[in-house]
Image (cartoon, rainbow, N blue to C red; front, side):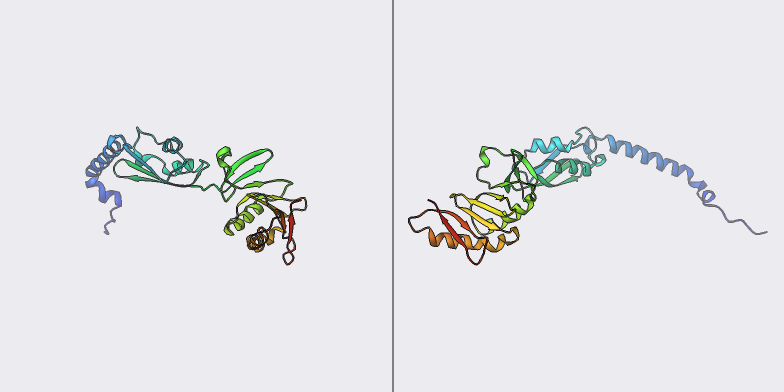
Length: 234
């Protein structure tokens, strides 16, 4: 008569007692791991922040000080920290046995966005960082008006800054063309937004050539790139 092959349960039956002990030990070990104060967050370091305070970052992170750090959701902490307007990215790391480090990258202010009577300090992506105040006068103002795409002004401002010009504000005229006022008061008419990057290099050479005279320059019309027009103040 052929012997029936033993099932896995039958083969393990002699070891059930040892298996039960192992499971009990794992359960006890898991409990001790969960409640041991050694794994509570006893050290929390924050790096990379200059504008946002450590307290504000920790408040957003919502780290539970009386709970094992290895059982806390660091991805959720990261999401909450990155919701702070000035934070571009965050990384939360756990270190054995009970330390946490938070590394953040802050956004860089780029301009003041004026829209609907409100002024907000924004970064290059036009993310609003905070309401603009008196200390932000050094930033150029992008004026969102007439339903025009303000991102177009941001691209134009990038080209202006690369050319080392000092703009006070950029706006659209009634035809949707880009115009700029320099810190010295000179108004520059660029025309078609797609041509700004080509025309910004003309501004400084032309101004250096004509501003040595006694007449004050009021505006520089670059709408026709091959025939720039200098308008003098009356």
